Image (cartoon, rainbow, N blue to C red; front, side):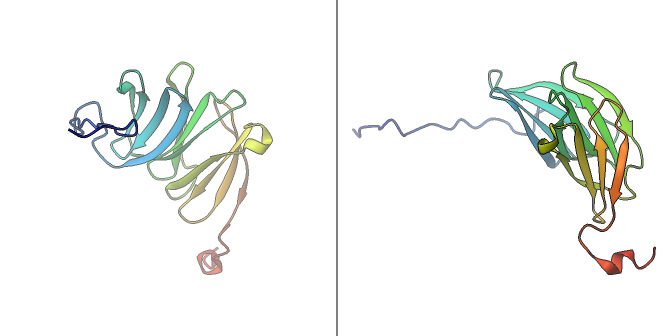
Length: 161
């Protein structure tokens, strides 16, 4: 009989394609606290995962696939997620509800959402697949403050302008 060390562990396999898990590619994951994290997916849903439940505690369904996401707001109470082609959704973490959908935030899909921590999370940025960046106020109904065109310095991409 072999002696088991304290470093040994057992991994229990579960059914991963249940109605509690995402049915398509996971596109984002965000830390909420030591017990919870959020995921977004191309299956058009946000899921709140709970360590104590060892599964999802909440699912929010949208009408379009969700892309990258970030938590923002002065109280870290807003979740911004790219939604479909160039849109984003503002989701309230406190009450677990949709606060706004901003349509045509970009001409193409949003590939990145970043909270601007150095500015006390009062602002966030969205970046589309074409390399354009918009800076927004981190409120329930964000205002576009300004745009940085062609942040990747791809001059050929701007030739048509």
